[in-house]
Amino acid sequence: MKHLLTLEQLSQEEIIDILNLADQLKWQRKNGIEHHLLKGKSLGMIFQKSSTRTRVSFEVGMYELGGQALFLSNRDLQIGRGEPVQDTARVLSRYLDGIMIRTFEQKEVEDLAKYGSVPVINALTDYAHPCQVLADLQTIREFKGAFEGLKAVYIGDGNNMANSIIVGCLKVGMKVAVATPKGYEPDQRVLEFTKQYPGMFTLTTDVLEASKDGDVFFTDVWASMGQESEAMERKKIFTGYQINSNVMNVANKGAMVLHCLPAHREEEITAEVFEAHADEIFEEAENRLHAQKAVLVKLMGDN
Ligand code: CP
Ligand code: NVA
Image 1 (tube, rainbow, N blue to C red):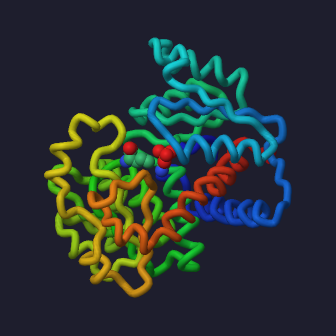
Image 2 (cartoon, rainbow, N blue to C red; image 1 turned 30 degrees about the vertical axis):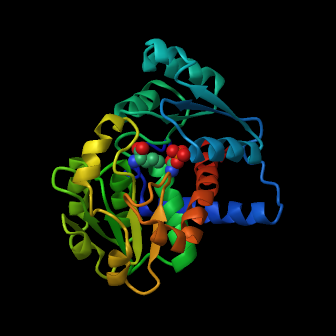
Image 3 (cartoon, rainbow, N blue to C red; image 1 turned 90 degrees about the vertical axis):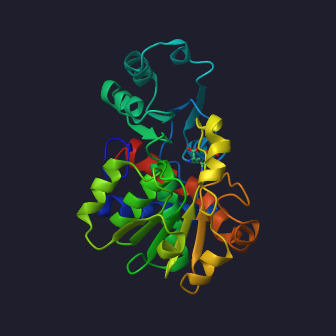
């Protein structure tokens, strides 16, 4: 693994390797065992969108690994004034050991990797959120013990989270059912990808049909970052695409609920279901730290 741009690029073995290392680092942290695996290394973190979890978990993660992280906001970088990503990539590669970027277009992340000479990590684009879904998979394995035989259900917008959930869950052996309104389906490239998993993937507009016998439920905001002007219209279109008690009533016993956060209560999820599953959701948020530390070690570590 040279970069983490999408989950499509990872094999099942590479995903499991990352999750195993993430579990190990989590255990070491809980037990106060130092793990300075990136001593003296620097990660640049370019943010063109807001963030709470991603910024803090990467920054603390680098510190705990013995390295440092630099927060590089679009507002301050020359990239925000039009310096090409090709040049930024070549310059930053001379100072840094890795670059993390959160931006709009997937192509910008790909270009950074293409023109730079250090590992690049996608920390969310409009297309994908691979770091989040690695943390989600770590959480699922923690609560359920294994992936095989589980059915993942995604309800809502066919956005970056939907794209990465579909790819990640299929790769580790889960079935995936997705319910979105017409016209808001996951990316065509992801739908193409699901054809490699016959009988494992379904797409419908019917929330209850997708939810039946589900083991792990996901949802995400109806309007993502960059879609603020569509928020009112989307509220109408997505009404009913919600994780609520009707959904949980058709789920398998002991079903989990995950949410990448931030959550909009009474929109994509009811407050009742959110609070009933808060232990899972906040463990998921914590696991961003552990899963990303594992990714950083795999990409920037010495062996
Ligand atoms: N889930 C997630 O990526 O959160 P932030 O936007 O706060 O980083
Ligand atoms: N789909 C959301 C995820 C936020 C973590 C967004 O892109 O804004």
